[in-house]
Image 1 (tube, rainbow, N blue to C red):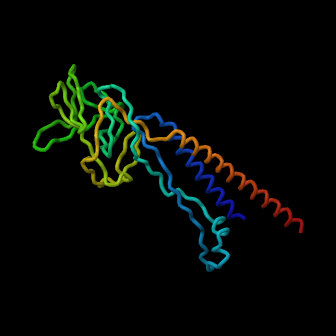
Image 2: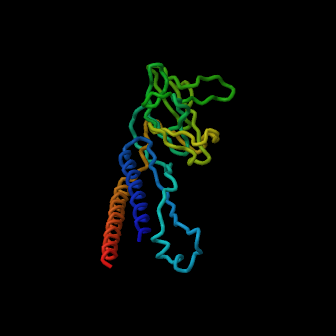
Image 3: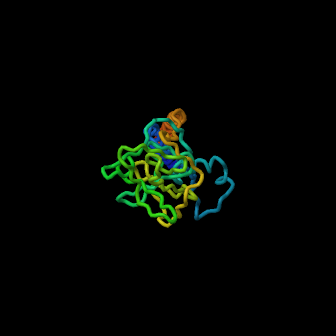
Length: 258
């Protein structure tokens, strides 16, 4: 009976974490370039170290009431978000597996959030003011960042090359990762590597679209439906705990009266 309390409590904690994740996804449904989080779950069943697993302990019922739910990991879903047109010259959307490289006081970061701007030094930056890294062309000398001349018409082609009045002025440094699970969210719609030694590769399968932004990949209807189901599951686990608590109280009273 007490095992049921552990199962129900772990279930409530799991549903609470899933609700937090779904709420964060919903809160960022309109955030440019946002990638939703997903949770994978492991089931754990306590094993006795003093007795063998008999037929009763292996029954589906016994395995179910002795299960606890553990969050294996929270993963980022890097599936492509839909693109929408803005007409803004400095807005770029990436279709494919590429990330822009950003220099921050905390180290190198990676982003797909393409609502860019120009800072006081003429550098192309994120909306938070962090400079976007420029690609270093082999055999050519170039600056670390992308500098945009004043009062010139800027165009960006599908390969991420940048032109001012049709003259080339640089290109985005665009990278990819063999396994995107190596990335973790660090705020400001940016990512960092879990392992500092993880290899960063040149991006290959991508297209850049000037005057567009990539929306979040959150499905509003699906997330709201999930939240309804999660709330119901949370309530069901809560009722199980109440029911078990009442049963234990009744058992104690009966025992006292004997």
